Amino acid sequence: MAFRKSIHPVLLALLVTAVFTLGTALSTTARAGTCGILPFSAGSGVGRGAADNIGSLVSTEVDIRGGFELVLGIDPEKVKSGCSTNSSCLQSLGRSEGFDKLVSGSVSARGSKEYIIRAELHDVGSGRLVRSVSRTLDRSPDSLLDEIPGMAEELLTGERPIEEDEDGQRESRNDLFVEDDINFGDDDDGPSSR
Image (cartoon, rainbow, N blue to C red; front, top):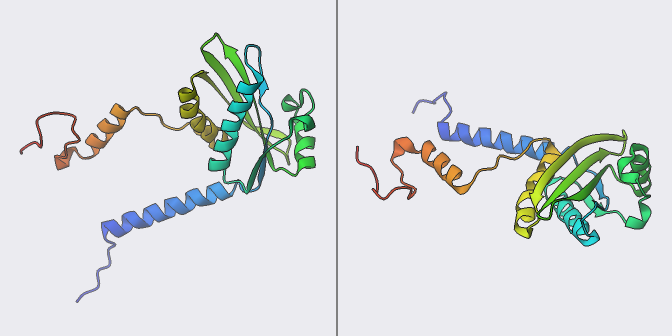
């Protein structure tokens, strides 16, 4: 039996997937360290409880997606007034609490049906703002639960996640398999005959 010098397409696909997965894992661990979450400030028309709840959602998503060894909320009593907008104060607070990164944020009202949520990622070592993300979101719990994970992902990576509705996803899957005559139930004709 002769030895084939070419790589089987399935093995090549698995190899590419493994390299991509390893690269993603390494980029996630590059953020390893600790991250402190400052209490989100509540603007006019926003209750303290709403700002705290939104800050908790962001904190949870940073913990899930951030690749940090530890994510902790910072005691509000340790945060001086105006500190979340002052880089030297943030750097001093982050160092005294032992954090590598800090997340600060604010929630303000936009009319009676929307929030403007702003989150910022700060590097404690350099004292600089790494990234800032802002979203205007419906005040409904479903909207907040749906949108804050993407907001946190953009805060951590700098890339806004691709958002597609179910129809867009279904069309994309159909486009991938158009030559295979696979029917995803979008029409009532059944499998096509060629």
